[in-house]
Image (cartoon, rainbow, N blue to C red; front, side):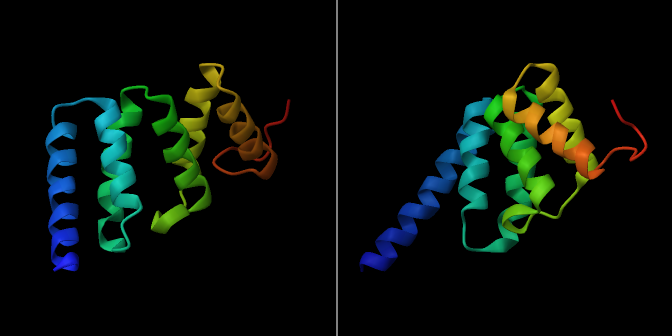
Length: 120
């Protein structure tokens, strides 16, 4: 009985998170993305990227940081994409975000998503 209750509770949580995220609030979209990325079923990790992108596109800083790191590290089943990571980190750096500056510096130092011949 407990397992069935827990399963129903998890499904209900997903329904409520999805309902809230569909209203367009960046924080709700971020929470739904975290729910999906932390789900043990890797088939829903692509949903996490979709929702994290929606939150990041609304300039939610933590969503931008997380999404950039997912692309940079290939984290949690998300395929590495240094070009996308660099764009996100550049946006964060332009906003004066320290983590964005750090990761943008790494991109340039390692030549990820940038022209390797570009130096300061």
